[in-house]
Structure formats: structure tokens, C-alpha cells
Image 1 (cartoon, rainbow, N blue to C red):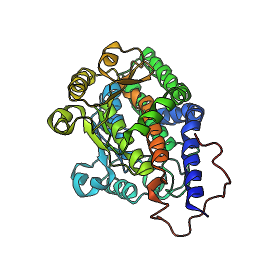
Image 2 (cartoon, one colour; image 1 turned 60 degrees about the horizontal axis):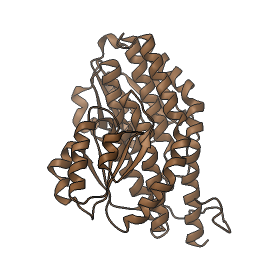
Image 3 (tube, one colour; image 1 turned 30 degrees about the vertical axis):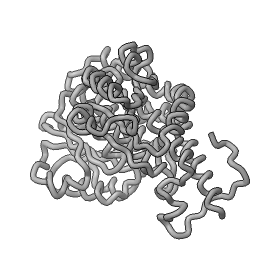
Image 4 (cartoon, helix red, strand yellow; image 1 turned 30 degrees about the horizontal axis):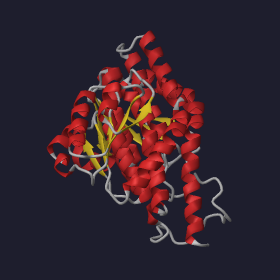
Amino acid sequence: MPPNVEKRHSWRLYRDEIERQGAALQARLQPIMEQAEQIARRLPLERLSQLYLTGSGDSYIAAVSCQYAYRALAGLSAWAVEAFEVGPYHAPLLAAQTLLVSTSISGRTKTATASLGEARARGAPTLLITNTPGSPATTLADDVIELQVPSIDTSGFIPSTLSYMAGMVAQLGLALALGERLGRIGPEQAERFRAELALALGSLNALIAAHDGPVRAFAARLAGRTPCLIGGGSLYGTALFGEAKLIESAMIPVSVQQVEEWAHIRRFLTGPQSPSVFLATPGRSRQRMLEIMGEARAQDTEVIAVAEAGDAEVAAIAHEVWPVPALNVEPLQPLTAAIPMQLLAYWCMVERDVRPFYADIRPIHIGLTLPPTSSDGGLR
């Protein structure tokens, strides 16, 4: 089969998941939230003092964003830890007062099973978020949240977006449920949070339609330049997600910078050669983000901002704004800010004319075959 046919098929698979994730997440929102509530009711919260949120790849990146939700909603000390590091570096801290929340979509990730096993051996309660019931990781978890989303199952040959988004929904639901049980969140606040979560998921299709053209144009004018993604707080995780998808899809070396660290490091390389996407939605990092954006623009950097629709301060600095809905709860913003990251990865892949993971020139599995196609129908 000609490599170009395989390549275009892989593009369609990736695009299809982006376009159907909104409906899939809305369909699974209530069941995921109910599971989180049931687990929160039986966790031994009276003795818990710390949460480790672990995973590898997208699962770890989701934890980087969601750690802020546990702190804001439940007042719990929650920390994102790469699953690999749990055993070698954090094992002495694992005990009955530490809850380990592991995300492994396949349930077969070696680092996930190892971290769960280490926690169990030391008497720490364990919770698994997965898309694979009955997987090896489930045998090491005291509680399990099953996502049951129709994510791509192509043995790692197509970058996935839906499982990452669903994993964040589960973490957000658990953080809310813990906050309610601990009395940190009242009924009215909880209802507002649920309404905003539903709003965020319900906006995904419209965001794809609105951002598709501008993001495609940005990908086209990169012309070999290295983009920089800048985020702070929960949106630093979104910047890491954007980097992951760009590398997996388009094989582009991306620079990711935490907002304050930009001022200490990345600013020395800013300029026309480094177009930059600033995640500038409302929150505790926004004011510093505005300052950094202004400095970048003053040095002739192309400044793109992902920001709340109608934000005049951002629009006064940025060359272009990719607007997202207004959300009052900062930890929910990674759900909507992820859409331009996904589209950027997709269009850079198409613009560079490559298969994800460079699989067309460096196969990652001998014998991979994809359905034949006679045209690129459906490619956008």
C-alpha cells in the first residue's frame, strides 16, 4: 500500500476523534460523575492528607492540570507525579494517609501498574482511572473509574485526544465529589460547577468549527519555525498537551514554557523566528501572561492568544485571538483550551505531509496495515 494512502487514512482517523469527542464526552459525563461520587463517599477522608496523581504521557499531563482542581475544590494537597518516579523517589511517603490516583487508559502501562503496586505494598489506598475494564492495573486498585469512551484503538499509531479529555473529566468529577464530602463546596457551588463543566463539553464542536480556519492558517505560515506554547497554573498542563500532540502528529520540536519561566529563559530566544501561543484565559496567571505577551510582541514575536471571547486587554496585545467560552472555574479551562492544541497538531501534520510518529518512514510496528482508500475524501 502506498505510504501516502496510509498517511491520509491516519489523518482521517485523528480528525474523526477530534470531531466526535464532544458528543462522546457529553454522553459519558453523568456516568463518570456518578462513579466519582460513589468512590468519594467511601474513601477514608478522615486520614487522608495527600493525593498523588500519577500517570505517563497524556495521563501525566492531565494530572498536571487537574492537581489544581483538588486544591481549589477540596482543599487537598494534590500533586502530579510521573508514574515512573513513584517507586524510585516517592515510596517512603506512601502510607495509609496518601491516596494514589493513577490514570492508565489501557490499564497495561508498566509505570502505572508499578506505581499502583508500590502504593498497595505500603498500605496506601489506590484509585485507577481507565478505559479498559479488567486490565492488569484494575487488580491493583481499591477503586476504579471506568471511562468507557470510544477512543482510538490503533496500538499507538494515531495520537489520541478523547482519552485525555475523559481522564480530565474523571479527575474533575472526583475533585468536586471530595470537595462536597469535605464540606468545602456547598450544593449551590457544586451545581454551578456541574453546569460549567457541561457548558465546556457542550462548546467543543463549536470551538472546532470556529478555530479550524485560523489554526490551519497559522500552521501554514509556521514555515519551519519552532512554535512556543506558554501556560501557567492548570493551563501549563494544556501547553504540555499541545507539545505532546504536535510531536506525535507532526514531529515538530516544540518549546513549552511556564509563564514566569518565559521571562527567565525563553525571552532570550523570542523574535520573528519563534511564533508563540499564549494560554491567556482568566485566572491567577492571566496578569503575568499579559505582561509576557507584551514583551514578546515588543520583540517582534507573532503573538497568538487563547483567551476568553471578548477579552479586550488580550486583543490589544495579541496579533490574533483564538477565543474560548467564558468559564468562571479556572480548573475547567484546560477542556476548552485543548481544542486549538489538537487542531494545531492536526494541521501541522497535514502541512508537513507526514504520518504520526513518522510511521511512514520509520515504522514502529512491522506488519502494520491500514484500509486502502482511493481518495482523500473527508480530509479537511
